[in-house]
Length: 238
Ligand code: C5P
Image (cartoon, rainbow, N blue to C red):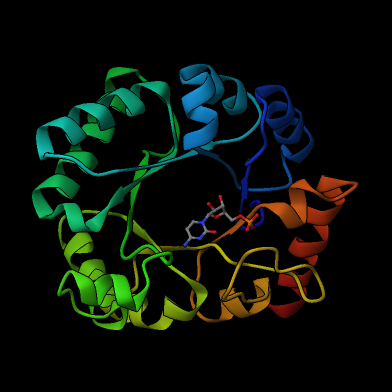
């Protein structure tokens, strides 16, 4: 049986806590997301230790010139990450360099299983319309699908987007793109600092392929039980 389409965000202060969560959630979620905070503090060791329990989604949001991004992605591919992120606004050549670099690193390491994938981020949800106006950029509703199409055309296998953008991003990226969405909250749970949220069932119905869920699982008394409850709600809805 395939694992529930959940990427649990391991946004915790120490590597030991992250490893404990990954161990408890092994077999309950599809991937564990390691962010800049944990990677900045513990580097490749964080990936290696989490990967003992689940595939690793290393969320570094690369954005630099194509050569630099390509080489960085090769290094990440050698670590054996299953997925990583880039900013689509880095341009087509940069996104392509990330895709090629990640694959090259994975091959060089002789890794087995599914090839790693690059997910592109469009417009950060923290960018306000005032920010965009101040740099004479089009509004987010215009930019998000355009950047999704650019990244997909450059070879990105998927996109990260808010639940509210799923339909527009799916239309721009096509049926094969993996759409990954944060801001997911089971009905009745705290929204924390997320401004726009969707339930797991609604996000999947809107076209998501993978749900990024952090605190509703990581702060639960029993994280594995919380993940199982979300998985059950998805099966009921299917
Ligand atoms: O705890 P929570 O479920 O809110 O965690 C969501 C995860 O998704 C965090 O790692 C957060 O950084 C990430 N994320 C997000 N919103 C975005 C992009 C990423 O919540 N627009």
